[in-house]
Length: 149
Image 1 (spheres, helix red, strand yellow):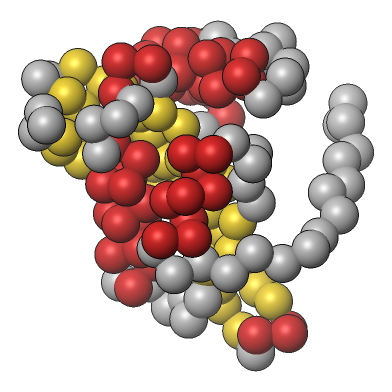
Image 2 (image 1 turned 90 degrees about the vertical axis):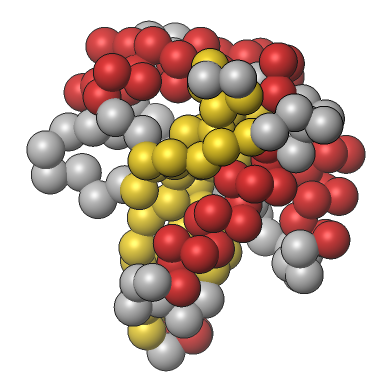
């Protein structure tokens, strides 16, 4: 097994994050229109953005990333964390990068005011296995989108 390291993402990671995001979106059959370095820099690294972005590296090269942000949920009585994405590209799959990213996000969230974390899954076997083995509980939800804003 190759050593995977996790670090905070920086704007100069935008090209790698865009490449990895495009790979993920192709697998789950989502749009790749916004998977560009320019778009990633303008949104994920915008000066007022509240995103927490981590990068997984294998042998010094980015192979995955995770994004989370804080939010409020009255059903849980306060502050929570929304895991927006865990993405591992072809070069990092099967190396423990997804688990390392997920565990790093959990540690980040523990250092925040959040008392819980939620996420949705693309329902790939690897994602489902990771989340189930990490103690996550699947709940039936409907995903809604409002595009073109």
